[in-house]
Length: 284
Image (tube, rainbow, N blue to C red; front, side):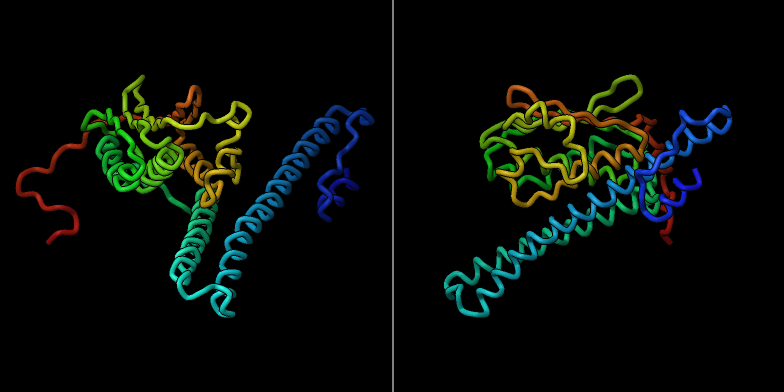
């Protein structure tokens, strides 16, 4: 066990104590606990290395694009009539880098407990409608029909900013992967003291072999790789992390060209309206 501990301190996370050779029951229990700790450290190290590799890959692609186009502008390879188009591409790639950095920072703060959630009574129906309206231009551009089923008011106990992020990410995916002229639906319903919030779209079905992994960090299904060149593979992972931080659940189903994401939030009573003449906090 001393040898294994020495190996761990030098970065060898594969070392394990031989439990079978130990006769003493307490020492054997200690060795099992030690091996469990080593396995946890090994998984953590593998996740860390994978995370660094994925971030490096995601950063490299837009940086290579930006460098190539700027080099083409400077050396005259890109003709004058194409410079505006080229600069637009460069700007899009810079925005993609910005989203990657912001998403990564949010995930780090969330997982380390530095991103503090502030749950309060939140009208999830009103918030859903407000976020949906932000996609109006893209919805019209794809000719989507919208079905909204959210009885107002519908209050839940949740952090407004992070749930806004959840709805934004889910609706962004729903619009992005909707078939032109298809239906986009958003519903809020009550079940056993929970609000069930569902975002659905008509489009390509997510393959069954991909469905269990779509919430994993940096995971992209084949359809996303071929049709979405702006995705980071972090959106759904961030969504699940936020929902889990609320101690709630999120699920996904996809069949017959219809994909549905559903997450839960805990219902709460509607807050009382302020009394007439009462000023809001912070008002003079």
